[in-house]
Image: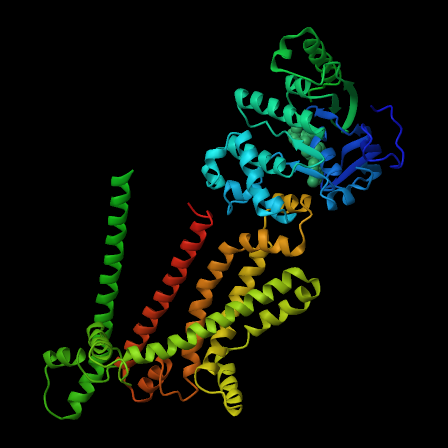
Length: 274
Length: 296
Ligand SMILES: Nc1ncnc2c1ncn2[C@@H]1O[C@H](COP(=O)(O)OP(=O)(O)OP(=O)(O)O)[C@@H](O)[C@H]1O
Ligand SMILES: [Mg+2]
């Protein structure tokens, strides 16, 4: 996938495997009191429509920062980036993507249902549609009985699930998720992994996903981006040989273990403890 | 947990009771010292011999004592609150209502003005730079100097009665609202703002869906200050207007005629009024914040 050369958006939108995100020699330096922090260094990455891409790497390697650049929440110091054929800013203005933050970021004065309604209120979707979406996705994340509760009445994991439902309600073309399942127990995580796969397969959306879990990355992704810190950079992009049609049982297969081992090796090859 | 809580409220109640008793004792002693002197002077002027029993009795019952004792004030309150028709000039309820009217009007106008100025300040850089110094300067002018000017100017425009007084209340109460609301409107969580950015929310949506709500705890804190400031403003405004009614007029006429008991009764009444108003705002706060899930 990184072999594809970046070019202006000329292909028709209907064509499959259209370039969704194109990043070319992108670097980002934060100026801090302790001097510059090289959060991202010479990133080259192409993500196509319908890809499920995972960012994996040790803490501080720039996964969140890269996701934020795609979402126009952070601006690069050098290099170029295109999202959906436009600048990240235009993509944001067109509400092309949905973003799940590392923290739930629910409004404390809104109930769970009304938190999920927020993005749909802002994009002026009709009330009946909002209700239907909320019911559908709250049920999916197992929170249908907590619709009318306030965030503080839910556990941390439940709040995170609510924030996932909120992003799903919008059904965006591109879903950016920053460690969405980090705070969940194994069983819930398995369940939501499968639900996410189901949505992805059914809709052909593009997913960009940050995780710390190798099995999760293997299970979900079509492409795994292995990153390394100081300076934050991509050390390897692995295209998954696994079929798109995945089941939890896949985790016991040879191919699964081989891919997991490859990722682990890539991570370890670059690992220094300092 | 429960018994501990109970004993806590018990010790708290005990502490308050001790404090009140202490103040009463000091009050009575101070009254004896201050009023006793006057009593002795009076007795000596009669040229007859006098006893300390006479001084003691007189100190707590003379007509216009330098320092009235609590039971005299309580008697005056009882007389002027319960023993008068509420429409009578002698009724403290009548005067309280007049003051309350301009307090509430001034508070409502001041809060509205304060909120509007705060919204302008947080949304407009030029307003932030140009308006804030004036807002602060407005409060450095002594209100006692402003009040007569406002009353006279408005009076010459044929505006009398409740409006000039409400203006003074407004003048005092908009300030804490501006300060609190500016801080509140800027207090939104960074993550919440970024979430709104990912939705490409408009400025209005930012305001009505995020900032307005994050500002609410600050708003209510300001409103509590604003309503007591409005009460002070109303009372101060009643001093120079030559007003016939209101707690301020009552204070003024009391001091004019040396009616110290009457002054103290009006003072206690305005303290009670202030307490009641702040309590009301506090209740509204709890109601609103709880319904919004902002308190548990
Ligand atoms: N706003 C900022 N200002 C200064 N430095 C920052 C800022 N945001 C991130 N950084 C730095 O950039 C680097 C990458 O941070 P980032 O949050 O992208 O890491 P991450 O890979 O998401 O880590 P984690 O897995 O712990 O979430 C870190 O060294 C971090 O300290
Ligand atoms: Mg992160």
